Image 1 (tube, rainbow, N blue to C red):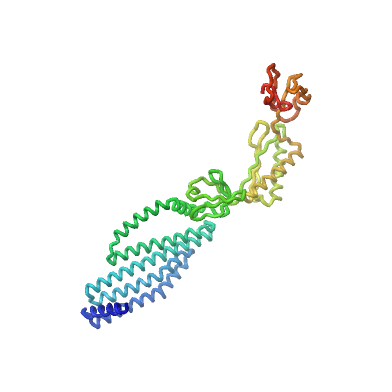
Image 2: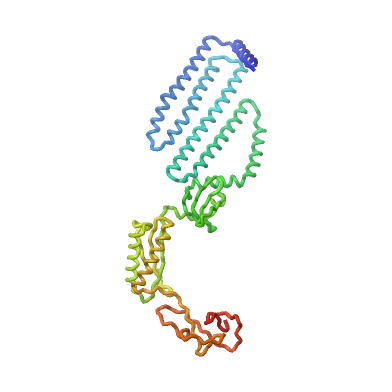
Length: 418
C-alpha cells in the first residue's frame, strides 16, 4: 500500500516536472491560494459576524439559524475555489492532470453543496420544530415528524449528490437510476399503507386542528381524549378508559368534532317547559335567579360569558323555554347542567309552577270486569282531575273469546281484543 502511494506521488512529480512550470508560476499559485485563505478568514470572522448582527434586528430567529448553518460550507467553498484557481490558472498542467483536477474539483463542489443544502434544510426544520412547540400548535407530536423529515432529507440530498459525483468521475449511472426507479416503485407499492398513514399523520400535525388532550368525536361515533398522534396512528382514550387506535389514513378522511377548539369553553343549552296557565314573567325571573346563582357559586361556570333566557315555542303540553350558559370545559359542562336542573326544578316547585308531562288515563265501560273475573277498581273508571293533560283510551267489551295471554294496559296486565 505504501509503495503504491509512493509511486503515485513520484509519477505526479514527474508530470509536474515535465510541464512548463516556472518559479514565477509557483509564486502566483501560492499567492492565489493565500488570497483565497485570507478571504475565507475575512468572511468567517468579519462578514459572518456582520450578517449575524443584521439578522438580530429581525424579530424571528430563522435568519440567525440560516446564517449560522451556511457559515462552514461557504467558507469551505471559498477555500476550494482558491485552491482550484491556484492549480489551474498560473500553472500549465498537462491534459491528464488537468482532467484529474477538474474531476476532483467537481466532486468536492458537489459534496460541499450537499452539505450546504442539508445544513440549511436542517436549520429550517429545527426552527419550525421549536416554533411549533412554543406555540403548542402540534402538542409535542412534532418531536417525531420533523426529525423524521430531517433524516429523509439527508438521505435524499446525499443520494443525489452521490449519483452526480459518480457521473462527474466518469461512471455511468443510467443503470443505477433505472434500478433505483424500479426498486423505489416496488418499495412504494409494498409500503403503500404505511406511507399513507405517514403522510396522513403529517397532514394532521401540520393542520394543528387536533392536539394532545383534546376531546374529539369522529363521524362513526368513536369519541375520547387524544392521547398521542404518531407517524402511523392516532390514539384516543374513551370514557370507559379504553384505548382506541385509529390509522392516520382513516383519521384524516373522517369528519371530526373537536370539543376543545376554538377554546376549551363549552356552551350549556338547557330546555324546559311550564304549564300554559303559568305566570311567564315569574318563570323568567326564577330562571334568571337560578342562573345567576349557578354563575356565582359553581366553579365550572364562566361568569364573563353571562346567562341568557328565552321562550322558544308553544309545545303540546308546555310553553317551552331555554337557559343558555357557558362552562369552563366539557367535564364542567355536565356539572353545570346538572346543577341547573336541580336548582330550577326546586325553585319551580317552590313557586308552585307546574312542569307538565303526559298522563295516560283509561276509561272502562260500567260493569266491565277483568278477564280473571275481578272487578275494576273504582279509581280506574273516573278520569283523573288534574292540571296535567291526559291521553285517553277507551276499552270496549265485546262478545269474542279472550286469549289467555292477550295484550293491553288494563288492570291485571290484560285487555280483551288487544
